[in-house]
Length: 379
Image 1 (cartoon, rainbow, N blue to C red):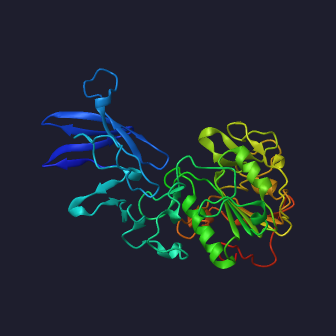
Image 2 (image 1 turned 30 degrees about the vertical axis):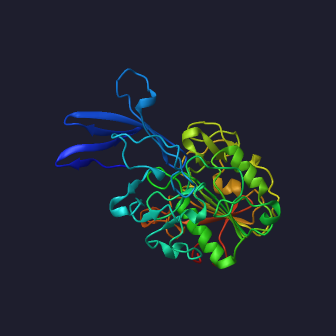
Image 3 (image 1 turned 45 degrees about the vertical axis):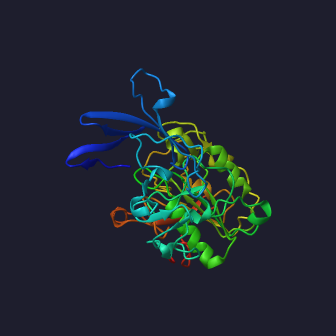
C-alpha cells in the first residue's frame, strides 16, 4: 500500500502513515484510519464521516478477523462500506477478479484457502529444505513475507530464547547439540534495518552442511535478552556469529532505544556516553567455548583510529577475553550478503586498509593457516 492510484487520470487513493485517503464522490476525499496487528493484518478501518471528532458505530467501515494462514472468519465481521478497500491480510491487496481470491504480495500471489503460494519461490535455492510454495515456513504467527521473496520475523516478536528457523524454542538438551549460534538484529531489512535475511541464509547454509538441530537463532535486541541468550548457550559450539550494527566499542542491539553491549568497561558507549552492558559483565555461558570462533559481523569492531574510551579495548579485543578460542573482527566497514549471509570487506574499505583481524585472549595474532568459516570461504 505504497502507491498513488489514479482512475481516469483522477487521484483516487493514496496511503498515509495511519491508513489511507480515498475519493468519495466527485470531489470529496476521506481520511480512513486503520488498526493493524503485529503481522500487518488490517483488522479495523474507520472514518469520521460526520466530522464530529469521535467515531461512532456506523463509522466503522470494515472489521476483519483471520485464521492464521489468512482465510477470513465469516459470520461476525463488520459490514463493508464503500470507503473500505481491498488491503487486508498482511496489509496486502485482495485480488478477487475473475474469482481468483488471491493476495498480491508483489513477487508472488498467495492463496489463503490452502496456505500456499501460487508461484514458485524466486529465491528457492536459499531454502532448499522447503517446498518453494510454502508460506512463512508454515508458521504465519511468527513470520511474515512482506514481498513474496523471503520471510522475516513479525514486528515486535523478539524473545530471549534460542530458536530454530521455524520459531520453535530449543530446550536445554537440544542446545547441547547446537554447533553454531547466530545472533542478529531482527529489524526488517532495508535502510537502517537489521539482518534477518542474512541470518536465515546463514542458518540454511549451516543446516545443509551440519544437519538439523545444529544451528540456533537469537533475535535479542535488548541488553537483558542478549545477556540471557549469551549465558544460555550450551554444548560445544564451533562458532558464534553476531550480525549487528556497531562501532569500535559498542554493539548496537537497538540504538534507537539505547540498547548496547560495550567494551569500554565503564558501562557507557564511547561516543554518546549512553548506558550499556559491558562485555566483561556478560554471564559465563554454559557452553564449552574452548574451540569456538566468535565471528563479529559488525563494522569497525577493531577500528583503533576511532575514539576509544574507558579500557580503550575494542569490541574484538574484549570479546576475545570471554572464553572463546578466537575472534574475527575488522578495522573497517563490512557488508553481509542478503542471499548468502557471507560477510565481506568491500573494495572501498580494503583500499583504506580494511582487513580481517584475529584475536585470542585479548591479543591480536595472525593465523598460521587459513581458517574455514561456516558461512564463508577460507580466509
